[in-house]
Length: 318
Ligand code: AKB
Image (cartoon, rainbow, N blue to C red; front, top):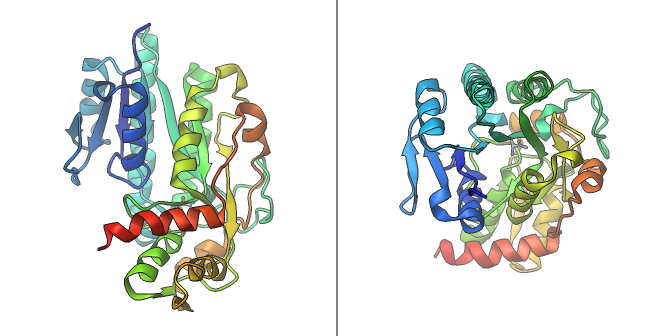
């Protein structure tokens, strides 16, 4: 069997920068092409610099490299999206439609492409039940980012039903990682707090104490993404995007966990516009469909994640 030929857009982002090496490890370094917009890392490997909204370029890359799998990770996150809603709409919706249309043409030409597309807990909104948020529930987001996630979910489901494209998605919770910092999200406090703890032994949270949000360590997020894409299509009962989660905590709880390693650490609070976004999102998620359909299981709890973050980020900041 010919190896999968994989194309990853948004490769410099928080998830892309860890998913690309994981895919290269699994499928071979020459079989994974990364798309960078401007931030090209030193160890970029096989890559192309360009804009995911450039349809002609995307078509050329996919055709010339006989791409069979696309991880379309390009996107503007929640907080940045509220500061520039037009940008969030154009980037998030425009690039997704471009990739889907190319995949449709390729399928018609007998060259099907499997696609991964990330949704988010931002698809939910203030009218959604906030505890153990079910897979099927009210989707009335209060952010432009969330609007693009709901519209994106409906669009990928439409292309699956109407054109038979194999598209799979996850509603990611906040992702915590040490290799690349996130940018422009509401859950980013849970990463920034580690920088504050290690550099200054203090951190001012832009979310209030008591703000619970669903979260996941990057190792689990990368594994979930690859496991979903490797699952037999007969196991995939949800084509909009799967609820997925690992842990739920509030700022004071992660601070208490950090304090176990750095006793002098202290947290203070000064909330900003991101509080309103966080207040519109679930506190915890019911991901039983993912657990049942393709055996999703997280491995990192709050304690394991905190010690791994401190162990890895510490030397990087020296
Ligand atoms: C954000 O905070 O915008 C993202 C997300 C939950 O999708 N991390």
